[in-house]
Image (spheres, rainbow, N blue to C red):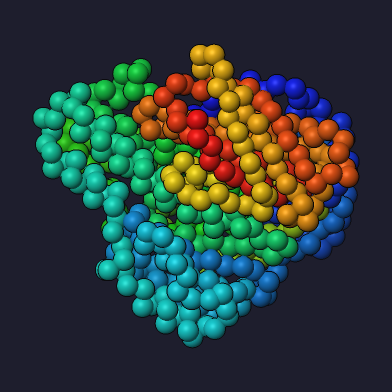
Length: 498
């Protein structure tokens, strides 16, 4: 994903939006498992401070997230990124925890093969859940397309020239596959949790967020080949969505006893073989890290490249990676150590993600939290809506949106967008509106941009329009446009022909 530079006309800067934002109550989940039981019973709201981008916020209440039927639980089998043995073992082992899961909350089982479909729930029928999980047709469903693509590439032989177009072809195949898998998860998690805590159990063997090092050979060191990987961008979006939409995520690239290093192409040196097998040690766990285990499995999760996106996404949401069966019980028990903390904030409702931390007032100790909280719909979801339009999808949202594009001289254009809030039964809010735009460049890559503007005082009207200037390459024939009121969170999207 790339961000295009957009010149916006006749608007106030986004910073001005903060001037009219009032104080409101927000919330974040905090892991207080390291606090002794006696201290926990005595803990009061004033004993904690929430830090938003380093700014202290006053805590108003603490509530323990009891694992007693209130949770929304989704068990998600991502078949195109899973081996049959991973899906089979995960189904068998999760079936043994059917009683625990149905006690925690309503359980839904989703199989994505490739599109997600629900095969169970949401309900709390323990015996039926156990049977459904045990009977997941792993041999028929699991396709492990990523591994298959790499195997085809490997079979081409070690002598493939560095500038051979087939290298780029297989790289783009993997990037497109991962992009599609991540987009399905973004749609699921952006559905939100409302007032319920949410748990995502993600069965997947993962993916590499830097696949160019595998496919491009010696060219991987060429500066021209160092563009940001599309899979790295997708990995970041998973982290942001799981955290911002409050999905505690347990990733299950589950195995038995044998280590799995994936497909490794032939290399000329022992060092190259080591990099292919491990990706190098990117982040080793420390003794102080909160982890299910600091043995071989934790080192494996920290080192193997295809597990890094799962590890980072799970950790950003107060979850973790369950690599072996023995870790499952501890992972579920940790849910009982989570607390919902409410606090006062005046952060602007502009869709930006805010880094969040929880600090003990007297000791200064920091407690684990999700990486971010959201003020409204984050850009990662606006990007998803644009990609859907660019892929030929239909217009969506609650707003009736119209857009017109007028060409100027050279590559300059004027875009006018209008939204009718009347159809949604709302007035235009005197706050922020985000205009999102995207197009496909000559190489087929999406260029995406966002502009947050302050709506003029029109509190009694149900219609809104805005005009802005932008530069579009001459070979762009269509522009995807989405508009969202970031207070009411009403949105609409449409495709504009040039």
